[in-house]
Image (cartoon, rainbow, N blue to C red):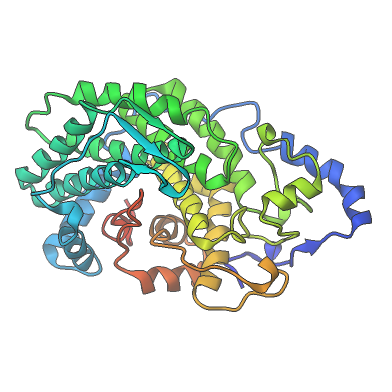
Length: 407
């Protein structure tokens, strides 16, 4: 079974045509109008906490304590990070004025370089904090300065997603450096301008594409808003995030059909089923992309966990809301099949594409560790995958920063 309380342990229902006609109107009204946060935004904090994007100072301190003591799994996670290409002090940044990314990064004109330089900036920022070796802080700054002094735009069909991925990693790095490194970062203002003028406009208005796009874009928008202390953008991004999360992970309490995002005009059952990759049976924990593949589903679930964690650090704990329940059920549902259980014929016609990625650590720590929710499948998968590395897009080193971390 997925990680579900008794009230959610019913099977999804395949609607007959007659039943669908009878229930569609009410379900669509629920999807279009009754999404969490409808009519209001999640207010930005009065004072932003720093560092406060995905990982807090307290969490960094605990990770440093564990690594210094040689405790596991943190020491092995640290060794993995330090042995990666992203921690290399000889890394040369490869900035471009225009990053052009087509579908599946074809063409790939700077796409991989940008994402990996952003991950490297975050990696070396972490390395600085954990080691207090100033060379790593300077390397992180070098990477951020190279891009902030060069990039002007993202183009082609994958520009919004590319901006979301790279834009999720940059503020994580910048938060650590700006708020913990006492040395000079002369170009921090230029870096802030880059985030405000190149990245934020590309992501803040969201996307009508698959859910992982908009969730990743909102992760970038939330992180950038924290770094810039931009309350209006934070509020807007959080409201979009709440809407999209409700439309990405299905709960039985949603009714016979999943919730929808109003701007997508999914106003019939047929349109909704098509958007959910042809899946007509809806079961708690199913995501909008489960029947596409688990890799893209992992991108969406990871972005949900990152935003929820940032929100918690900023004083609004979403883990106790429907956001946390959807994340818990989404992780548990996917984990069960990622661990090897065969899917029923009612799920993706009996065929799934595994490959969830290193995305469970933050959600598992928050929901099982802090809140005590049972998450057996997610626990097994999380422990099997430790130490969790990087997906080379926007996820990196989450065993190191969030494993068994109550802070």
